[in-house]
Length: 171
Image (cartoon, rainbow, N blue to C red; front, side):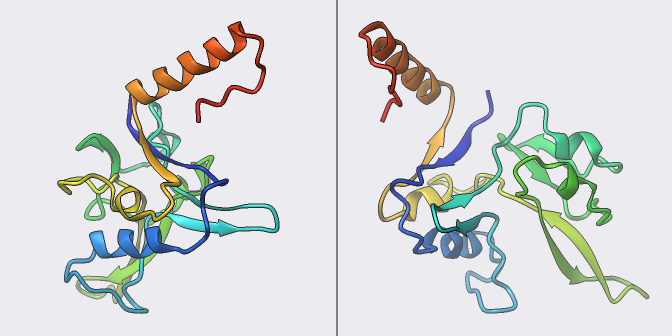
């Protein structure tokens, strides 16, 4: 099972620290500014909730399935976009059921002044401490989930159901 990051809206305070950490983790220079601020998650704020939304690292990822060039692949333990192959067709953004594929304009080569490429959460592949967003969240609203965590929550829900509780969330 693919690991993924999940957010708990009851704990999110909308501080956007996760977005900043994500941008920094993916910055080539270790610095960000208005032109280079490109988090791979989005904090959504509505009248009812505030929480980051990011890639669920789907097992049979719709974004990868529709990519005509194979620029979205499962590698480094995540569903990853290879910008060098991406042609900017935007099919992945339309196919993603969570709306988490972002598009950015990059410098082009030759006669092409710029080009658009897709980007999304890659679980901070290659980062020693895992996803930066999880590490910096001041309230612990973001959690890296994998098979053991899902099984633990499922087991807690089953125990709650067996005990007569119908609201077991595992939290």
